Amino acid sequence: MKGSLRRLWVFLVLCIAVLSLSYPASALSPAQEYLLEGSYAVEQDGWTLVHLEGVPYRIGFQRGYLTAESASYLIISYLGPADDEYHRMSREIAGKYLWDRIPKEYQDELRGIAAGLRAKGYDWDVWDVLAANAWADQGLYEDAWEEDAESRCSAFIATGDATADGQIVMGHNTWCPYNEDFMYPIIYDVKPSKGFAFRYQGAGGTIWSGQDWYVNETGLMVTETSLENDATDPEGIPVIVRIRTAVQYADSIDDFLGIMLEGNNGAYPNQWLIGDAKTGEIASLQLGLHSWDLERTFNGFLYSSNHPSGVNFREEAACEEPDPMNYCYARYVRWGQLKEEWYGKVDAEIGKIMLADHYDTYLGIEKPSARTICGHKEIETADPSERKPSGAYDGKVTTSDMVLDGMSMWARWGHPCGEPFDAEKFMEDNPHWVDENDEFAIHGLRIFDSDTPNPWTLVENF
Image (cartoon, rainbow, N blue to C red):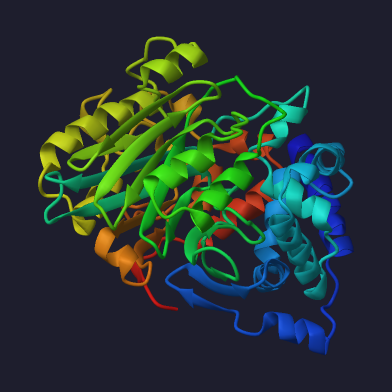
């Protein structure tokens, strides 16, 4: 009863917070209608496909207006209600430490997002928008930062003699609690006034992916999985600036590396997998602060699952010996097995199969769990006490030819294997999770349930 009353109280607070920030959208002015010209959003098999074009402020306004509900969910999910202490602190960090490290081009875009949100009836401002975008950077300026290291991914990139026809094949699935990232089924198609056109997966109001799935019109292909490393430099360039700049302005692996390494602040350490569809070269960059490990090849299969394998990165991060039960390491082991199994045969269809793989190397059985590449922590087998509504909640695959022919890709919203997630059954079977979470988390879990599963869908010209 006590837990139920607490959840009811939190729900009422959230309702008041959301209602106080959302008003009926007034009729657009001629200037606002002009800003929206050329932009649009369409629905496709669980995804929202959003086209943006123009100068930075205009692109921002389009993004804020067309994805307003998702953007508002993102702000509340990452920062809490507007009157929450953590939310207020995040806004202060955004204004005091991050704003001056954001180039004017992206400042204008962030301002435009806030204006688009207001035009749609939401009262968030640019500091809310920046703080929600900068979740990967703000920990550098927060003394008591406690981040739940739950954001995980599985990814691969292959080329040359590793693939069926010699072209690059890249795939990725994102891991995170379903109730926290239910607002991420958006694929943006951006044609900026400067730089190259590019596409990325994101949530409403994001100027970068956050899930890190990108392609651009020159054939650049980028994905990653996060790593853990405490070394950071608050004076460096935020990761949201470096990766957005790289995707918008780089047309080669060398350009990408130069942008990501220059002024690196160490935030959001990860293993970047990069491909150049024009040349067939692929690369892996395990990036810490002062140390990194780089591998480049025209023939090979590179993979990532949040396990640091690079000697230099491991030394800087003081990594311990891996535990076979650790779900990052277990997936790393499985990727090595899949590499051997499919080497020379990898294409987009095999990429989908690998991202949906359910073999648990720790238990030695075919059964979805927290350790399988298609992760299902909600049915964790080795340690049921660790069950959470978390795991692989999407899948994306693309190839050189697809990227060079309109930046197209295959995408699935929901478990890559296609299995459904039943929110009500999970909460019935795991009442402790319900007691530990508020109504917003429960609301997000139900939205994820209602929006999934979906088929693999071909995202091409839209």
